[in-house]
Image (cartoon, rainbow, N blue to C red):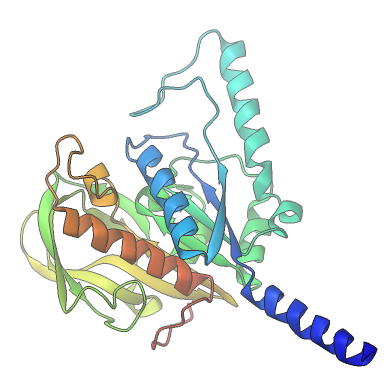
Length: 289
């Protein structure tokens, strides 16, 4: 009887461990332009984690003091600027290789600028060792001048024009980030990024445009993709500038996108997170850089 109880306890423990949610660290700090949708994104990501039960989220958030949106203004006097920079370095200690042992993935939520993370190479090595990286919108506008980061991500922000409506063409109808979107997905208004250091042969495209968002010239323009980075998985979507892309609240201020678009976008992000964390493999193959 004692052996049976022991065996039962082992099976129960293994089941609980197998069902334990993944741990995701969400970083939303900025040293460049700060998007007004970051706070909305944080709220939605927390809700997606709670509702799915598939993962939990911890946050690395902006220290108080700088402007909440737009381009940062230098703090006066210089001692105040130095103190704020010290606070930023302090919160970003969560990205140290030692602390990252507590997480299965990291998500950059419209981060911008050169973030003072404690160990850049250690961060990339951690992803390459088999962890997840998820980048949303301005994650591609982060760490200009660090080519290894752009290589990991699959592209680097170059510029954008005015907000436009676009028809995104679905290149993978089986990936969990895009399986719900059909052959194409029309977004009524969004800020569309153009990229440098983006090579479609080195990523697995999920969403593309076949027309330039401003000139309407034919071409191949990446919108969202996945890639393998060593043993790690990377998911990036350039969408997510506007609050009404993120939020399904029909009363949100200056809504231009339908609630259905917001619902689809949340499923897009959730599917990408699950894919990167190894929770939903879909039915695709990925290309190594």
